[in-house]
Length: 258
Image 1 (cartoon, rainbow, N blue to C red):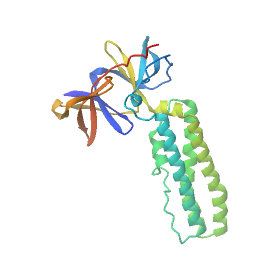
Image 2: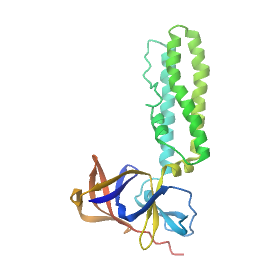
Image 3: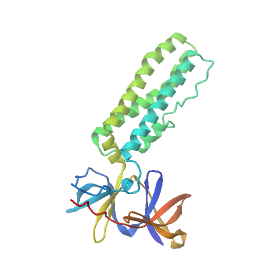
Image 4: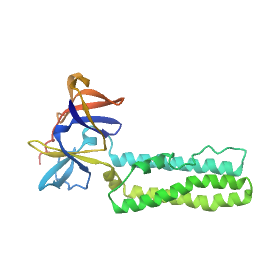
């Protein structure tokens, strides 16, 4: 049996032999290195050593996590603008059923909030406020629609004041998170400490699983695929119905010549 740490970067999953990994730690801020290779974000101090940090997204030519979060938040904001428009239509005309989500936990933003946690106090403070306003916003749909059945004018006033205020505060706190996008991304990502003759760190999006499989379960490639000689993939593993790229080796890129 071979043990693998399975991690995710972008839409893809990768498996790296567990024997190559010394430890999995929370991502943290790095110190920039002048003239470093483009794949290297910087360095950190780890157990009395200074280790370089490889950004796996850069190595696999995937847009940065910060860009992905920014794009995702733009979609979430658009979804909530549409939610408000749909609710407003139903408030104005009760013959038009409200088709939006009233359970904040089933909303895409609600799912993201439930899955996200941060080690940063500033981000956590914004998250708590955002979660509170977001929950109240979605649950207000029940209140306003029931109110419209018995007091139409009061219902319209409630939508125009209370619900719009909840919406604006939800959007405000989403924008606050965007201002902290670097910290938000760092809070979500992990560092894999790779040991060997030259220890280094690989920054990945998240840890998916620790899996133990037979070597026969790996569908070996006819030839090893590489990314500029720093990353070698030699097969595919089916882990719980998801195809995972099996890493043969990963090396620290050389710094650019000065």
